[in-house]
Image (tube, rainbow, N blue to C red; front, side):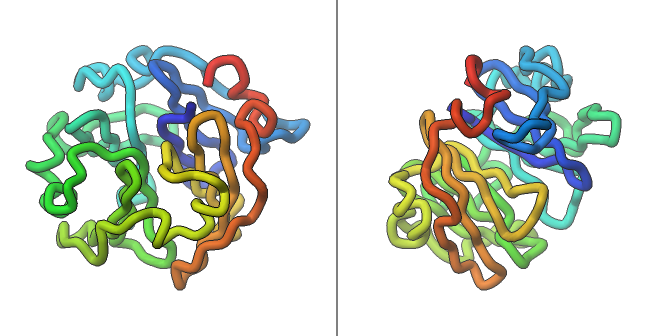
Length: 220
């Protein structure tokens, strides 16, 4: 399964994390030019901040809204805020990991003690969707307030339900844009579209990860 996925801004490359490994991939899934740029290799080997924080795995990696080179990384009940530079080096923005209740009162109020997946709300620069189990919540990143939810994914995301997914492992915004997102669940994925009005539709049928992402076959 894909635990987390993150597109490198301004490039056609993405990071994929699965178990204790990760890889950096040139983003043409299933196409003739699809290739590994780095990995798969140990998360601790490739990510200094993860290693120093005792993150041997990750649950979620998501852009900090409004900051192209900063990301939040969640693992278990803790999270990091880090910066990834143009040479793929990672450094802390804050001093090491914090607990989710200490840094995200909104998630604590939503009952999210861990996070399965997250994505910036389309058309905003200060909001995030967080997914946990069968539910999701929309949060204002600047005020740490709940905008709506928590609500069942089945009620708020018809595209995900139509794909046959009751929960979400990871969401990847397509670097090619077009309001397209890859949603991963177990050994499958689907492509959905989410417009700036937050209307979502299923863009392509559910497929096996191994058939649509050849670079992930054998280690994800």
